[in-house]
Length: 385
Picture 1 (cartoon, rainbow, N blue to C red):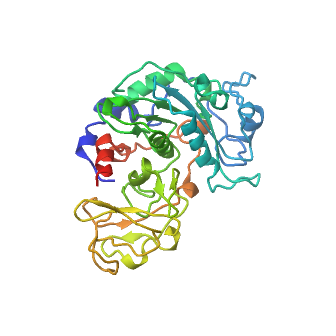
Picture 2: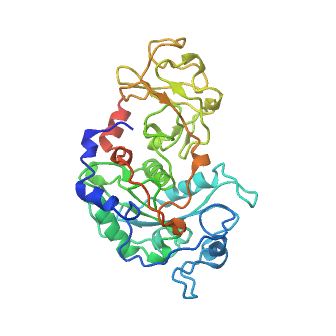
């Protein structure tokens, strides 16, 4: 992903220090966390939650008492489960309808399970704020802070005060907030992969946090927690062949489908790579683009969107025809010509980021350029192109 000076300043030295200490995981970890290390165990479905936890519950400190009752929460050792505790500032928690949509995106994922089903069962915990369906005994309203600054330190403090340490090996932790680090980015995941993220589309920066924006940003930031990047295999953004909400082009407006609908999840196909030095307009995104439309950048900085299916010819250099095969075109707008490689996100999910699953291996510090997120100004500009 290309650096953006205005956003580089957002990651203050304090936040950077909090996210990348010299010892362990480069992510906010609750200071109150005293749960013990986890011994490797059988994990039939590969979701980093051992079968014994999903069958009998999780005893965090080995005292013989179950601390996290996964089976009571609906866990299944033969179907992938993903747990997320959601704390929230007043007015920032997503609606029940938005949470329903998030659940459906994961339920419909083309991910195979040992029980013969497909999909991932995501368990969202908002406490009592969104009814019994989303109440797993956690999830709290926290004190309103219009600017989490420094974001890592403040998120860490809120997490330590509101997130039971016994849950750290099971639940991802997220916070519905307003803004962070003096900027207007839509969210932050602090590391890739990880166990903690924030969604910050609040009023301080005049975000209009519709269900679409909340759903897209939640799934985007959680995507970083489970190992996904803005460019799929790399950090290049705005790739027209990367059909995922991890791509800024589709995070807040949805992935465009050829049938006129929109998709708010991760990519399930990997269309042909595009060499910007000589993009072949005659093939579009190839056969794997048949179910989608897409967007790309023109030389004058404007954005175009295909009228129909993206497997048809596409005027990459915006010169009025779709016959060029050797004319260079910077179609992701980063001022360079690169080979744009897409990714099938669902085939590359990393379960067990950060402490989830009891992971203890240190993570390399994620580059600051990879942690920068879509800002309100960028989103506004995208709407007027």
